[in-house]
Image (cartoon, rainbow, N blue to C red):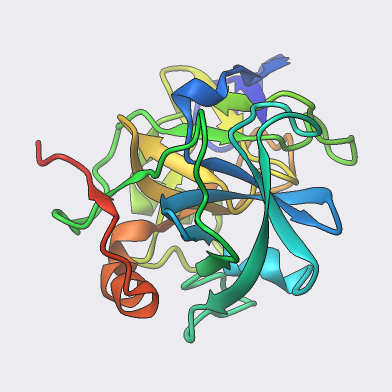
Length: 251
């Protein structure tokens, strides 16, 4: 996850600075590292003791020998390793457009322990994400294109932007109603990179989005695009049958 200072006009570029800063698992206890044969490749978010959300595009990469690490901000140590027993990709997921880029992970056992808790989900209010809201994106993604993943969980704090502004940044793509975008916080832009995708995008600890796609890691011009969790409320509840989820408080 990389941070830049710039004037947001989709073409204005200024000097790059450091990446999103280190954060603690105590602040993001729903954050999971999704792993293939023990190696991290994407993020995920715990929404009940036995289910998590990630992006369907992550599961294009690997479909077997999956597990998660929970309860640790360190990528390679601490916390708990839990096997993924099954997964469900949304039936309308489109690999080309990234529409409905959402999947559910089911665990072989309940995910519990210190520094582990389920995310609040926006099922009381399924309206669209408003503009100019601070978005906490977290993950272990690379700081530069082609680099290794970070050892310590990173957090960046961009701001949600209008769908029309996001569409301007991606003129050959379709920013659907199942998506929202983030890329500006005053004069700061933070982009998701390889290894961040599938992870959470939260507003005041409410899981509003799943990090889905964006421009090249380190791009000055392109915001990060999220899957809007509230748009998939009915599918999530029907598929999981879970009753232990926690709603975000109404504001």
